[in-house]
Length: 138
Image (cartoon, rainbow, N blue to C red; front, side, top):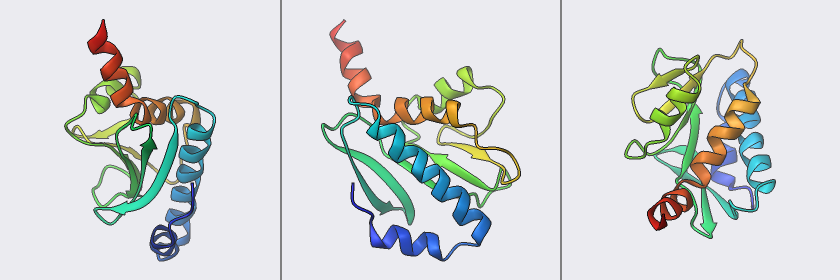
C-alpha cells in the first residue's frame, strides 16, 4: 500500500498525542492486513475527512476509518459502516470497551492500545464481505 499524502497531511495537523495514537493504530491496521492473506491489497484514502483503509483486491472487507474522537467517549476511535454487524459482534466479544452506537469503538490516550483485540476487530472488518459470502453458501 502507498501512503496517501492527504492522510499524512491530516495526521500531521493533529496534536502530537493524538497523531501518535492514530499512527500506532494505522500501523496495526497495515501490519494486520499484511499478515493475513485473506485480506488482500489495502488502499489508504480520506473518507468523511478521516483516514480510511479498504480492501481493493479482492474486495473482502468493509472500510475501516480512524480519527480523533469528537464525542465524550474517548480520545480516538476506530469506525466502521453502521450498517454492518461488526460493532455488535465486537461488543459481545469485548464488553470492556466503549462503543459509539453501531459504528465505532473508542480509546483513551492514557491507556495501552489493546493490540490483540484490535487485531481481531481489524481482521473481522477487512474480511467482512468475504465472511458474509461464505456464510451465504452454507
